[in-house]
Image (cartoon, rainbow, N blue to C red):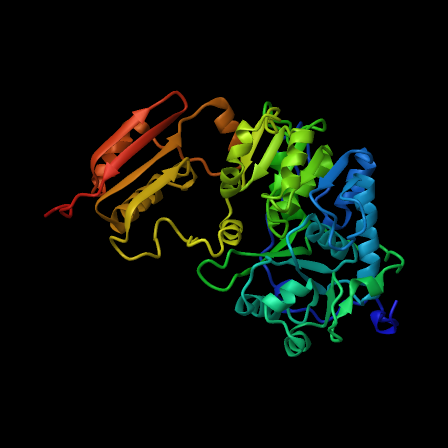
Length: 462
């Protein structure tokens, strides 16, 4: 270990002077469980999720599609106990680098399970991980590091270069920068120089204290930082921990997970995983041949990924090995930031905004589609404002088409604790006409209805 890798003589029980965003924030609502008979997450504290999973089912397997960047010589296939051990080692490395309770530690590296492992290691020290996306521009990266107020930074050399984090920027924006790979830069500490340090003593944050920082999509401006506590993650994970019929997570499941690992979704997923301890395929490179081999070998029962990755995997549906032959549940994690990351440079514009007040000029689009989304709009009045906005942004002759669900037991079960304002198919055509559409048609099925309407060439009322 290099001499400058250790910061000694620090009173770890002292509370440092904290930036305002770690002390001045709106507390989140906390719910222990849905009902007295419901199953509650075993833990939502990032600093112990892997350890709790290992205690509950040490030999269940979690398989990545390539070795971790923080342990490139180690196996990609480990049991929960093996990954928990790596988290504890990483906590020791970061402690040796000087990370202490309440420090902010930004993680900015290639997409991999080890983004989540690093977040757990950081949280284990009582510090606050901030997991950042891996395709940020220099403007975005520098803005978020500035807002984190002199964080430690764990990065790879590619991200340092891509984000323009040269020696001057690192000195100005970070307290210390650690690279997971070797580099000839003298202003950063290589993770290799920290290996062998003993694990630090766990100092988990209290349930209502800040535990994790993620960020918004950045599709309309510089991303905003979002603060999470163990209690807020616990509340979000209630749905996945519950004993649902048909689609509920089970210990005997094999889950194929292919979402960005920097996202808040990973924290709620790990709370569920620590509770049910299924076998998991953690996939970071969806078009890698290794992914096809893992899917074919382990034939998952639950698959979670993004819409555009499902499209890339379409050929696997007819693969003779039937990699999806055992799938019981497909989960579509439709997230604007993840979609923006995946479609970068492909001529796709992803915009996050309010559908009842769209940030577009009138008559911009030739078509608008909406699929099983309207019932998530919180009131009939808001739904009507959305319909009016769609009519406004459509060109004359433009088409508005889509579908939405009608009620049934499983649909209502899936929306416990969620917004569900059902649309009456029998009245929907008249609602479309009331905001200016013509030729409004609604076709009703057993569990859903479809619709199609046209914006007239002549504005309503003329």
